[in-house]
Length: 480
Image (tube, rainbow, N blue to C red):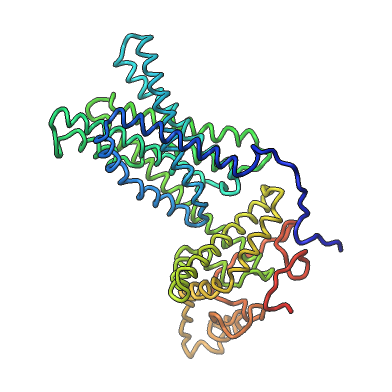
């Protein structure tokens, strides 16, 4: 049987200077830095130095909480921090600059054309601003979807990318609104709870810090569903992000236009639309995260059969509680570096599970084998620290073994007992559960571990390497 080389032969191709990674990174950083300087000058011009500092101090308060919330949603398969930094910087600098310039230009044009400044402001808030702002924020989601496709695999990734982008945008917008409110209070002499600054802070930071993230998350969900669609569904992949963007614009317009619905219009829209939508999307994301954990438990047993993982690891890696216990155990016995190693092991194992699922569904890219080999090599290099921690976590979080029911003495010999001889006098097919007995992993009696394992998926052409048929095999304790 022909075998493949361990690594594919790479063909060196000439790349132009604009295709080099450092050139693209440099251009992106320069663009964001220039946008940040321009937006800083514009906001400071409108609020003044003192108003800018007050707005900055108040606007930064919800940012750590929102970023931590989105990071918590992404704990199953966390994306790299550089993607989140790019998204936040894009929302705070580039998207905010586009929104300020485009909204101001459109509002002035409408006011000049209609000779109705009040009507122009209403049109700008309810029509122009939702279209411009959501399109500007969606650009960051699109860029991550196109150029960081490996890190954008589903709904949760879309929610996190969109939410962090919108958090950056809201941060800059809050500086502008709070700084302007502070300047108004300086002119009128108001202070305390009755001030415009306090009212603006309560509405924008206390009541609705999730408003902008909620709008843009709809766009992220559209991109996330498109990422889950098979490659042959090109029309669906194109329409789903557009549908999410349209929904985001519609909800944004409803939110901005709530002030036109009367004295209590804002509170009505808040109670009738914003809170239920926030609860529904939170449930959707948490449900999706549980499905991701189910994917980990279902796909990793194939790598147990191939010798890459131990039998307890699919259960431990498919439970957020077991993962946390493993990191705590590693931190206690190996310090912070050990905890980081376990976290990297968990991330690599999760990526392997998702990669195998995409392969089974025909959505894996041409680099499937190379990517799988890289992840498995990373797992193998971290196993010395991670396996004892995950073994401990599996023991600590495993469900208790079932307690056998007592059998009355009169039941023996009459065919009614369910004791040691089983029902109707036949011996039981399964011995009692024994967690981590003295038998090696491949011993027949070791298959009765108390950890739930999904049945092994059939091996297609892209199956993980097995000790018998693998074109490459890692060094292991069971091999010379």
